[in-house]
Length: 358
Image (cartoon, rainbow, N blue to C red; front, side):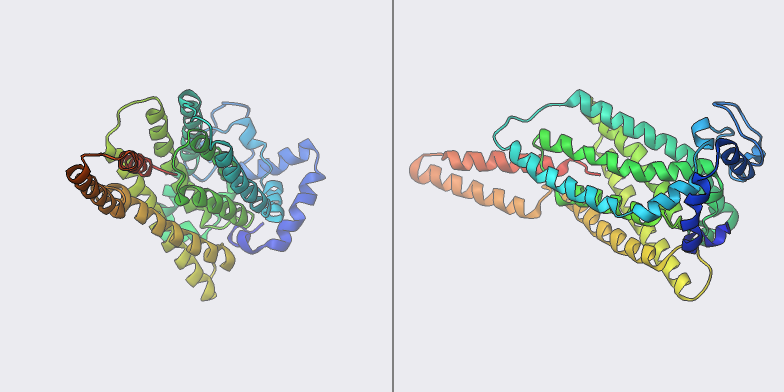
């Protein structure tokens, strides 16, 4: 397969599963030997630097070497719409779960939540270790344009596997919302729409193995490593500076800016008739999603960190409530329960909005 045309070789991609499925284990091993410079390793054995042209850990795990990249790529290409069904079920679970929790007390779930976040943090760390070195390598050696217009990462079966795992991790991460529902925390629009669109976009584009996937996967793995580590420590009741949460949000906004840039550049290059390993549809979807996320994360940042009260309108509401309460004291010497409840509710809303969201 010509690596420069991976994203556009749909016909060839459709043939790949048939050929690989018919292979026996020895033939599959031989095929992978061609990819790995005839070095096929057992678990944990160090390998020559010739194993791959890309830097990284100088060994491969057996499960990495055995990964049938062509079969799984074709499966994603043919079945990307499964993400739509999963998203619909996810949204139904959200509304059903919130309804079921209406008259129930919130659960604490601190220990399960800490373990959940720790597992995702470690997974993201391993993904970063595998994917980031190749990402840095191609930028420094071949330039920015090649980093989003070349699918050369597809030649390294280790990296291809972790791209595939990245896509499926978006399904697992939907579980974040279950904790919010069971703990009866405020579920904001940014949280669930981010999960839905990231999942759908990842499933949609990965079957084309576009060059832009390099940025999506590497940036997301890196940011999620720090973000879920932060969530883990918060669940364990560690006191962490608010500056850390702010820094993570800034990193997410920066991710959206880079996402917009590389998808716009890839689209323009593709439109001009030049070679770029991506598709027009993948670039347009990327532009839409990254722009929407950019706006939502900017709004979240302003509400969370740029004012004394996260909600600008809430400040006026609290001031109005205080004025009315003072007036009632003067006129009737009565503090109504409704005013007291309003203040408690507003305070809870402030705390809920300050919680960082993926």
